[in-house]
Every structure is written in C-alpha cells, then in structure tokens.
Length: 205
Image 1 (cartoon, rainbow, N blue to C red):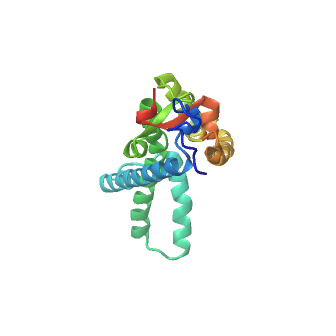
Image 2: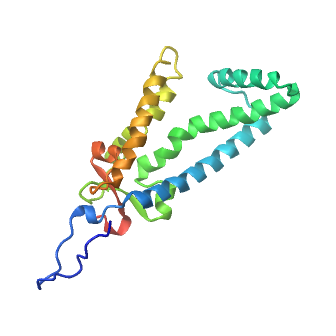
Image 3: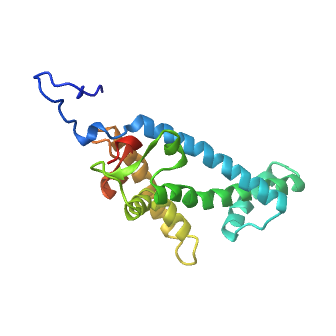
C-alpha cells in the first residue's frame, strides 16, 4: 500500500503532519531483520556445537534424553556406534546452543532496543508514539515476545515440565501475532501488548 505524500499541502500552506503510523517500519523490513538474526543465530549455534563436540563437554540431562531417542533410531538403521557418538556430540552441542541462544540472543534487543539484524537495517524499537523507549519497556517487550522460550527454559526445572505445553501454544500465538504488523498500525501482537513499535532510528524522537 503506497503511503500518501505528506511533504506538500495541496491546499497551500505548511506541509501536513503525517500520523505516527507513517513513520513505523512495516512487516517487510522487520522480516528481513528477522532473517538476518536467524542467520547469525544459526552460525552461533553451529559454533557452539563444534566447541562442545571438540572439547567433549557433557550434555545437560534433558538433552541426553532426547539424544538417546535419536541414537536408538540410528541404531535401527545399522549406523556404527562410533559414528553415533560423533553425531551425539554434535547434536548435543546444537541442542544446548539453541537452548542458550533462544534467550541470550533476543536479550540483545531486550536490553538495547535493537537486535543485530535491526541494527544492520538501522531500525529499532521505540514507544508506540515514536518516542525513545527505556530499558523497562525493552524488557517488557522482550518478555512478551519471548514468553514461549522463557517457559520452555523454565520447564527444564524439576516439576515444571508441564509449562512446555503452554510454551508451545504461546509460541504459535506470538508467531501468528507477528502478521498483525501487516495492518495499518504496523504493530505486531507483542508490540500491541507492550505498546511499542519499530521505527527507523532517525525518526525516533
């Protein structure tokens, strides 16, 4: 949808003032930032996996349970035990890296207001009215946007495994809520809840 031209006033006089929605970043550029962040995260996860496998670091118990299931499946296909152990080490690193980075990487945006992907595109989180947001606002948005990841990590604690199911449901809600940014308000569901929006850095007051 093409935005109206607010640089001139067809009726003469000073240019008309665009609404705040005019300055908010739309779904497309936010998607590109997410893809950049995804590539960075994948690279970091692979790096963690290589380090874990190379140093022979032990896996977390919950990771070991998942790896045992995978190893059993590989044995059914006649894959040698030595190869399975190498695969276990690499997959264990991937699982542990993914678990850690699922919160640590988004926390960059939760503290600074912009993920590395957003910084590449010179966009960042601000209050919904376009004013600069504070750290508590960033953290509130982080908590809402990443509630599913938070619950999945908490679910690793003894007796709290039932939270994993809630985390999965909330992850779907947040995912589909991202498409709300396609609307005229250009705010995803987590933005609406946290009363934030994404702007170009030069447009933040």
